[in-house]
Image 1 (cartoon, rainbow, N blue to C red):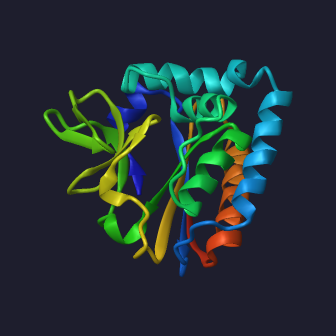
Image 2 (image 1 turned 135 degrees about the vertical axis):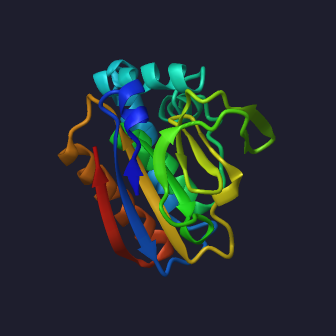
Length: 213
């Protein structure tokens, strides 16, 4: 995994930490997820400055340049406060909730659907990016996570359906995306807590780790 120079030039200060978690089991309805949701909701209600933090503001600046909308951590936080939080499976729900609690942007992918040498770079002009029922044609200035065959995420807003977690997922790639307001220690600490939350509900173990800036 690497960050391409042109992405660093257009989006100064970008960084990431990625863990591979091997041997997970797909999960739905785990008892720990509702408790985590309550914990994160309480945190949001007690932290009115959440949306005004320098880290969130920098994610927003990147998001509007890259995607033309707010970053998913902000969107998810708003939806949770509005009692409209999207429910997927336990693994995705935990990552979505934990990124709010940690104040970072994070994604989880099926590692076996990602080809060798994924990278953070700029969008491929003309590439049709699809997430859920929405499609985008990339113009070449978006910040993306991609592999040699496809775009996996439009950072920091959308994850493509091409690497979604499913009932067949055995190995997960978890990525926490940073910006110039985040530190190495902050990202690694956030990733450690996110990884522990995943392992609590889906089992598995951390098999590799990389930090890039």
